[in-house]
Image (cartoon, rainbow, N blue to C red):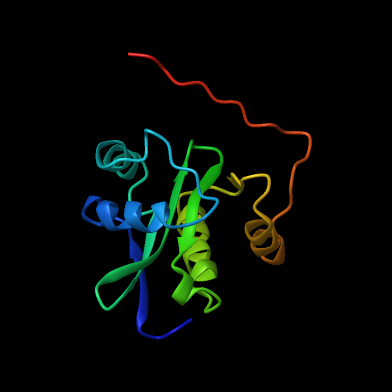
Length: 143
């Protein structure tokens, strides 16, 4: 990883720039809950876990990280195209894993879009494995 890139906790002040990063990543799906208000709440429930990569005061990478008290979860890992292949994604993941370990979490899960071959290769090369018997189901809570 470039020495001029720093990894630090994501804050509400980073969200606008992080959302712009995520919107520019092919294959990354955002939902209605990816907004300043909901992410600020997420940070309050998971203090210091989500991370950003900063270069020259700009966000060049980001990942959401949280836990439910038993398992950790990673969401939306992304690095801008010009900063990929420099170890920034792995550094973001390592920092999240360290933070989860520090709060007593011993297992972490993530969500990967089914046809995201590059993402699958990244995660498999980092030692992650698929649980083919699990399917994600989701429902929007009305009101």
